[in-house]
Length: 35
Length: 135
Image (cartoon, rainbow over all chains, first blue to last red; front, side):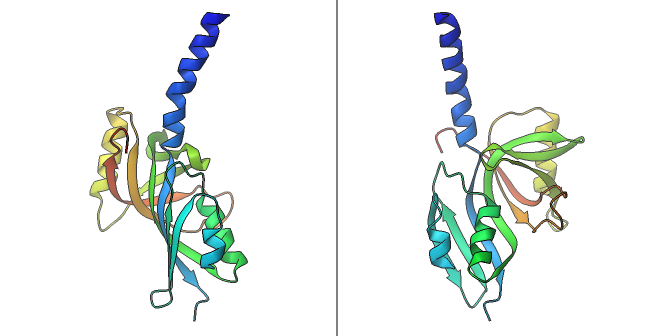
């Protein structure tokens, strides 16, 4: 049980940076209706 | 419109140019903001958001034998299509896919509003750079 918990913790630690790394950083939108 | 966009959690700054008719939005590291969320905020302010030039981080994956950008944090996979005026970045993405290079990449490209909800979102790739660890 403890071993399983350790494996789950390691997998979670490996996945978190990968998930956080996927993101928008900057967006430049053309906008209509600003006349 | 600027206030509505700045209220979104994860938005660092929003600058609106009346001259160029654009909204330039910078996002904080670790944000979960989606392009759809930004478009909705602009629409709710009485305007229409059109094409977006974005800087986005994700990993390159395969979709139908072609490179795509898995932006897990955005909950979507963007098909990567070449920019006719600058096909080099697309070639680099295809090469990374072929050589199974893992790791995050930063892509600059253009995303047009989807014609329909069923259409897969596409990014017209202009630049590709690997993301260094810790950046």
